[in-house]
Length: 117
Length: 113
Image 1 (spheres, helix red, strand yellow):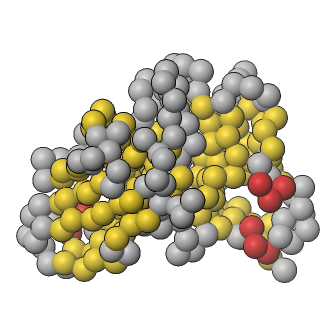
Image 2 (cartoon, helix red, strand yellow):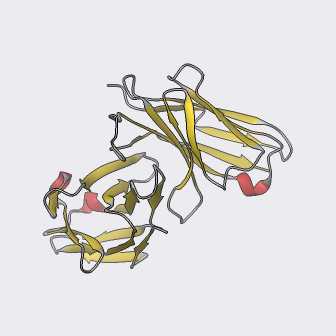
């Protein structure tokens, strides 16, 4: 168990540019989550995958945001036409969910800190 | 709708004294509740979780929390604070109306020598 990893750890970009973040979950975990955390706040749920299917999206996830998990393993989060308000820590978590279980323990990665200039 | 409220944004205690971090929740369903800790520049770490078994839940590093349905509370306690406990603590409600997980705003714990 090597834990959840995220890449890059830090990203600085100019307004209007596109950015993509990667998350590698714990290998046997079938569920993957993305969150956004701004300074002084708790993480806010963005989206959730079970295997490769994106099952839930927050209203926070505007049309500039897209997430994929093509083979049910790693996931990417892309932000197009970044805005200064997108500056935040983007967290990924994974869990091992069983059929019918509503919730399970999520294990978090270290996050990607995005700064939009 | 579901929500979680951490009643204190900051708590300061002296080393060796008890810790109490307060959390109230609102849920239409029987919730699952968690406490996570976040040390500076480190990822979120699970302290403990409640999933409708025993109402008193023991976690890592001497922390425990009690689920009180009548008070809709899930307060985190530790009998004796250690300097290494200084961090941000988040109360989390999940499993209510889907898989969305809702974090509280966090409580920063300061531990004085």
